[in-house]
Length: 305
Image (cartoon, rainbow, N blue to C red; front, top):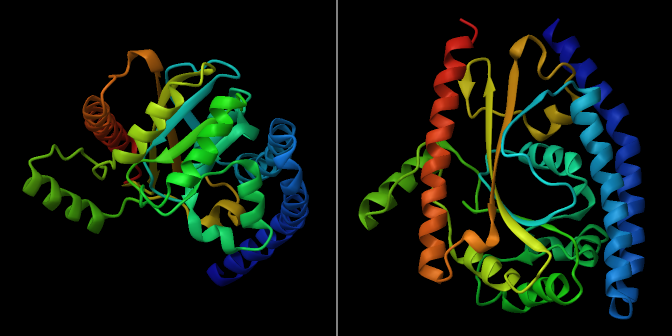
C-alpha cells in the first residue's frame, strides 16, 4: 500500500510540476532575450524581468501552499508594503525559499527577490543567463573574486534605484547536525559565541552589502528572518525539494510545521563600522538561536507521541 501511495504521489507531482517546468523554460528564454537590451535600458529590463520572476515564483508558491497544503505560520514584525531591504536568513532546506517568498508575496515584493546564488549557475543554459539578466548576484563566496559581480549588482540598486529584497543565507551552507558540531568546534577555538540551532554566520558578505546599499536611498531596512521546521516531532526536519512539489497534505495532521519569524531593523540603526556590523550580525544570530530554541521547546509540547 505504501508503494502504491508513493507511486501515486510521484505521478501527481509530475502532473502538477510539468506545466510549471514548461513555463520556467519559457521564462528563461524570455529573460535571456532581454539580456542584450539591459545594456541600453537597464531599469526597464529589470522591471520586466521582475514581472516574469513574480509569475514563476508565484506559480511554485501556489503548488506548495495551495495544491500541497503547506501552512506557513508567520510571526514577528509587520513588514511594510513595497519596501526595499537587505534580507538575511538561516538556511535549512530547499523549502526556505517558499518561506521567504510567502513574506515577499504579502509585502508585494515577490518579483523583486534577488538571492545570492552560486556562480556555477552562470554555465547553465537559459537558467544562468536568466538569473544574470534579473540582477541575481552569482558569487563564489570568495569576496575578492566576486568584487566585479557585486559591483554590477550594487550599481543597479544604487544608481538605477532597482526595487529589491537582496537575500543572503548568512551561514553560506545548509544546517546539518554535523555542520553544527563543526561550527561548535570552530567557535570554541576562536572564542566566538555559538548560536543555538544555527551555524555561525559569515559576516564579510553582509558587511559589503550593507556598506554599499547605504548609498541607495530607497533601501530602508535590514530584515532578519528566522526559519523553523518540524516533522513528526523532529525539529529542523524539512521536506525535500520533491516532497514540496508532490506531497499532498504537507501540514495535515501536523506532519510538517513551517514557521518564519521576521524582525525589521532600520538601516540607519545599524553600526557604521565594519567591525560593528560583524558584531551586530553575530548578536542577531545568537538572538535567532534563542528564538529557535523557544520554538523547539514549545513545539515539543504539542508533538505527536
